[in-house]
Image 1 (cartoon, helix red, strand yellow):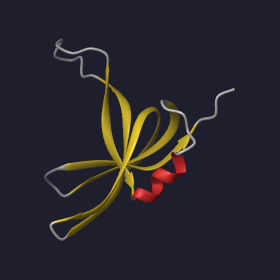
Image 2 (tube, one colour):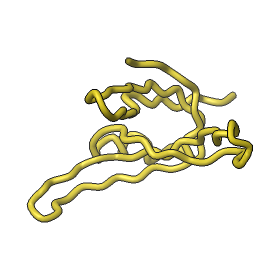
Image 3 (cartoon, helix red, strand yellow):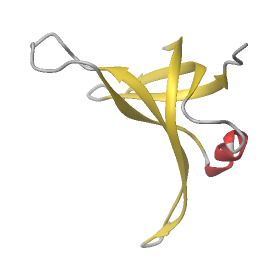
Image 4 (tube, helix red, strand yellow):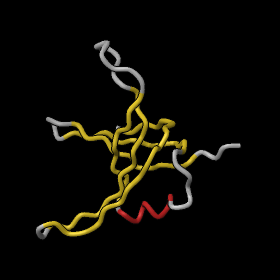
Length: 96
């Protein structure tokens, strides 16, 4: 399932290398999300990390000032037991 939302991206980091023979290559975006206020023990906002692709994706944002607003397309998948959410596209919104 895919859906779009406007988000605030507070940071981003890339990682590429090899750990004990296993290669890894990713970019992670840190997105502002609302805290769950339903239990009356949390308020405000926090950041949640989302994978957005390989380390090459990071290069698309080197000239973008953080934090920034963006149109994000999310994808939710499951293996039948656990759910995974990732960002498949992230387009900065130009401010006037």
